[in-house]
Length: 470
Image (tube, rainbow, N blue to C red):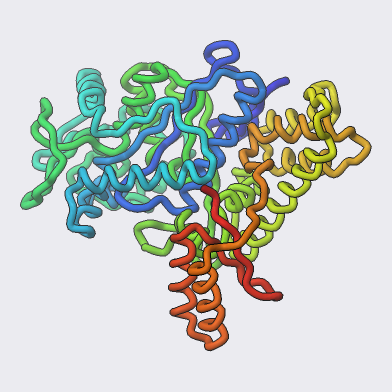
């Protein structure tokens, strides 16, 4: 079965042809750990996770590399402004190193709460400074860089004839006209980008390293090229990221990597569309208007309800976030689990070997092979589990197999029993606050219950509770 992916570079769906037979190396752009990752960021990681799981399900050997940006990501695409890590340190009165450690741990807590598979290699940028310096020296030796005194070392995009091929000619022309990146009078071309940066005059940085060009820090784009090539080779199979990376970050990764090696950097480029919030548009950490995974339990939903929510829309389609949608997803997930449990009871102790010749199994695999079409795969799963003409043991085996990709804890039993008296008292106190329309107190009590592992749902018939996923 051919595995197809939509390649942003060629703007078409293609049959995936790996560098090594039945093996695939995937590089995925990870978080900038100056703040919590929001659920829009995590939609991209869920899409990547679904593809990794699908490839392995279909028999591929996968090596996935993810970077952690803990230095060098400036607030501007023009390589100006404050480093986001320094910004986070100032915001919270901590060191940049403390900020990086705290938000890296917070990211993976949310990541694992969504049942995402651990990357095979995780690369903090601060541990690869020498590799980035070496890449910069290679570019310098080939004549692709130039210095700007007091600012940094820049890549000269005019020396690469096909610069901007990922984003397209219109984008490159837009940069040249100053439409996307602010002007820097010292740069030779508006699209030129930093290979190495120096601290701004009067700036006291916490993260700096010695280099052949002077003390400073790497340009943001450098880390991904250096890490990807170190762990996956000079040409890699697939490179993932959010759609916001196409225009600048991934375009510049391609430029510096291919200038350094003279080879294609990545054969396939994949990008997930934004999660948007109605009229507010895409979520943004810089604006402060975003939701995190921890917000979900505070609203009475387990994180896997959000995973289910995302699986119902293809990653290349924009997804609008609504609490009504999350509620529907939570109910859908409950229904799917109840169906799986019912089939498990019906199957009993009968042998349940997976029938790989069955049409439903082939349809499921075909959906996965078609650019990881999870909405189609989920439809096959639902239809198969509801089909009573298929023996229960076969449906049970299929549900267990599908769980390898969906990762929805389908056989998790619904929590039952009574809460401790003090927790029931908090629920009653919250109900009283709601009746009194004391919404502030009601929200505080909801959070207090969530912190203790109790999720609250306000249904038409009254308040319901369930225990959060451990």
